Length: 281
Image 1: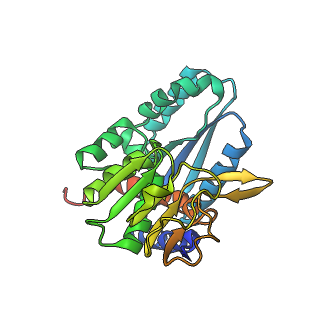
Image 2: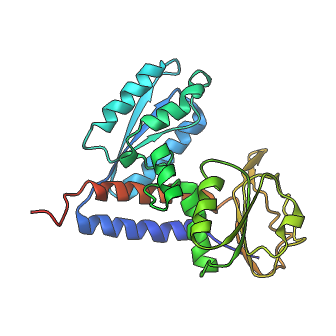
Image 3: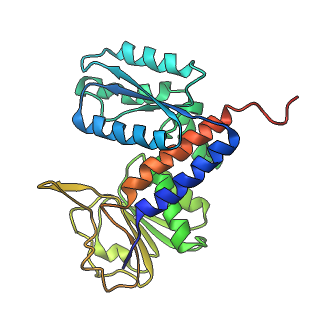
């Protein structure tokens, strides 16, 4: 299978976003709420900050201590909701163990118009109703790749493996909207791949996806991440699929770079929504 380079596509999209912002005179501002000092969270925040910086935007990192109370988080969210200089708000996950039971309450407290992660119930509900606002970055990334490599999508047989609220569930709705034949399964089995045009595989195991059962010309999107001795692996065995005709968005270098790029798209959309209505006056 031909490997798709997520970094190259991301670079193309970011250059276009930067050009659009310059034309509109916009400098988007992203507020990232970080609770505690989880090293992996800090790494991801740094990547997002660098990405926003490349567009000429601003990132505000609002930090709270590991032992922050529920009310402190809610108060901070409320403060950022009312800050007109902030276009997008992101709650960095995972939260400290003591606050995890309140995760949905925190996400629901973010202004839907600033919910650039697409996790607010209002934005998820709008997707169900066919009038989407902000959509989760993972789902946007997979749909972008699908349209680039398998358009037109109508009638395509799509298989989604997993049940995550940020990828599989919204993506299923998006593919249904595109008139695809959509199947969802909790775990990967090769027998499920028969006749599949597009497969997004989140749940599985390291290199569990082999060549067996893969349709010639299929598009596979690997959305599984596994670490072993400082190496990163996905669900798909790239070597085993090397002789099959088709395309693969691999791990690493596939979905990962696209996630932050789609966050930037949402942030730019939020900044554009803050512009005065050109039809008024």
